[in-house]
Length: 59
Image 1: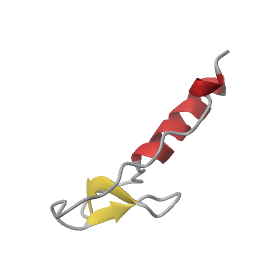
Image 2 (image 1 turned 120 degrees about the horizontal axis):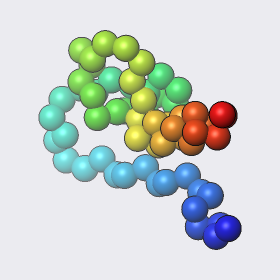
Image 3 (image 1 turned 45 degrees about the horizontal axis):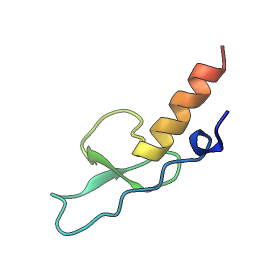
């Protein structure tokens, strides 16, 4: 298996005015793409990707 597929994707840089306050990721506290008013557990793209990998590999 190629090691290029095993790494965590890099966080995209936040540049300029991104449109308002975003909810913090419940795992790492980084800003997500969701507004603060979003209900439920919000995950940043990196944590969502990692969680999906754990879910797939768990069973």
